[in-house]
Amino acid sequence: MKKIVFIFAIIISIVACKTETKKTEDNHQQVESKTETPFLALGEFDTKAGDFVNKEVKIQGIVDHVCKHSGKKLLVVTDDGKVHITSDTRFNDALQGSEVSLKGIVLEERIDEAYCLKMEEDNIKSHSEGKSNKDQFDQKKEHIQQYRDRMKTENIDYISLYSLQYVSHTEVK
Amino acid sequence: MKKLRKWSRILHRDIGYFFIGTTIIYGLSGIALNHMSDWNPNYSVSIEHSSTSINLENTPSIKNNVLILLDEIDSRKNYKKHYYPNTNTIKIFLKGGSSVLVNLKSGAVRAEYLKKRPVFYEVNFLHYNPNRIWTWFSDAFSASLILFAITSFFMVKGKKGIKGRGGIYTLLGIIIPLLFLIYYL
Image (cartoon, chains in turn yellow, brown):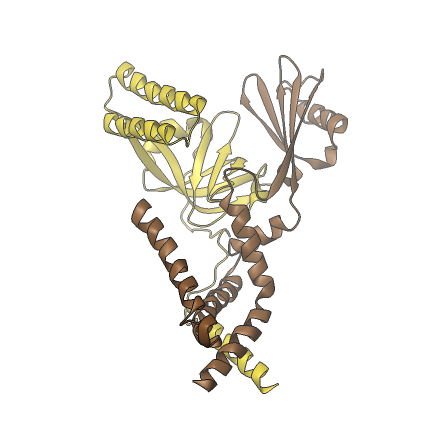
């Protein structure tokens, strides 16, 4: 009996050694800020997000997809547009199909020729290693060509892709 | 040394018993999540094709029409939301992660039904650290794995112990990950 008590004492000690006093937080609970966050309709997200890079905005839409691999990416959609959301913590997959009002920081990713070359290189490598099939390889190749065509047509050096870094959300009933 | 051996056995055995459930949880979910690119570890997916003549264009009666469709292929009780990904398609979300895609022109219906995989869904949920208390518990489990490794040095003496066969196994178990590191890193 003494031995069992001793073993449990060790286990409890290990748990108690966690001295981190950081306030426990529910990862995806809403934290209302007092300042009004600008609202971006998804239909105009791609055209207006450039004005809010690194700033917090609010969107509303239906969660079309929760990434099954990481659980840390969402695709939020409406009839008029869509936006990708990334988070440091996992989302509950029950969110899929729910309408959410979501706050996030606008992130910008620039696609330029160097980026296209890198994607091209990765695509060839991935295909040669057997990680992607012919269809996936061709699809990616076409996608890269679309970026190049768009840059050429619009006479621009890069394409900006916008997404949101997750801050908080509430479900809209 | 005798006392050390005795306590190594006691700790290895009794903490081992205590963490049997947790070991199975991490073992099962580890295999399930390792093969994520080959299968959906949380849900089994079934696809059903059918067709409909119900008008699902974006009209004021759309919600009601969607519910009528769901009565035909599933149940209106499962309705969650719908939207139009493009002018030719409506996507209807059902409770539990299932969804229905309808081609508005042809009336072709593609329903994707998700069903939670019993046991796997639950062990995967725990594997992903659902909250801080579980993090502490799983930290204790991880610490106990280190303790198992250390105590195993002292548990058995003689040619089956660390100075004999046990030592060879230990070396192999260290060399294999090292080889992977040398080759792939």
